[in-house]
Image (cartoon, rainbow, N blue to C red; front, side, top):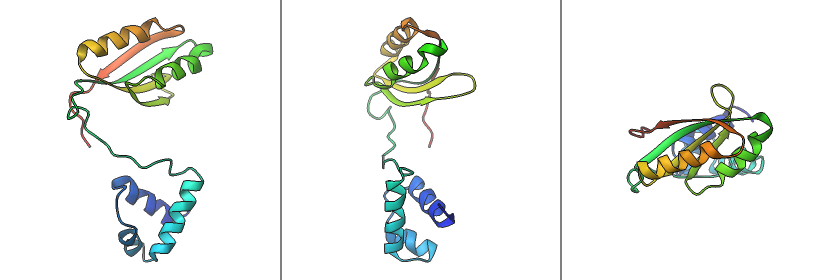
Length: 139
């Protein structure tokens, strides 16, 4: 990966629908060169997917939270796998720092969120669940 690849990635992160012609013009290269570089980045799994960031509140989700979860070390991967596949889990990561795992969850309301948090707390191996409720999503 070189500087041009980095600039292409920056452009795509700002707007994944940006035209290849626009990127090519900014970099001073051909559209074909940009297309080939993007294909290479996709093959190497540097670009994993293209997505749209949606405000969950617009879709009626009022119980949105970033949840830190800790577990006993030998159960960490099991707990992680159980939570990441749930339909309300929108993002998941294994982390270092304050928590072993982080999950963004979207629930229809605070009651549904509280129910989910109680279920998480009772999962085998979980030692701590720390939610941070979103008040407003800012991009």
